[in-house]
Length: 146
Image (tube, one colour):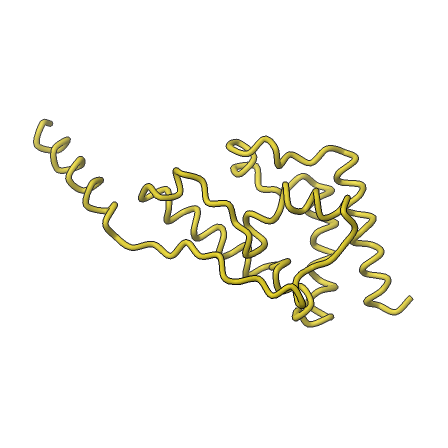
């Protein structure tokens, strides 16, 4: 058992030296999302850590293997929807993302429950949800030309 614990500790220390890619690419103000202060405040508090280039990497995101999971979530979140590149998203894709925003906000799937365990500031109140849903619906109307 001692040998197993020693090997485990050596492995845990060794994996800390595997490079990780925690990035926050530069933000181009001409392509990022612009919305009302109210909407931006909610998005920045509850969504931007995974859905923008403004990720605030917590201290524990430097500890492997936790770091691998966090980096993967952020990369997947940015791939699904990136508010830092909002104005470059194809309108058809943007419509799908806005519809998905309405659905996931209404059913409590976003922010992710696992994320909320460590970030209670990101919890969406009913008022926050209503603001995001109404903003999303207004954006959809603009995109659909109605």
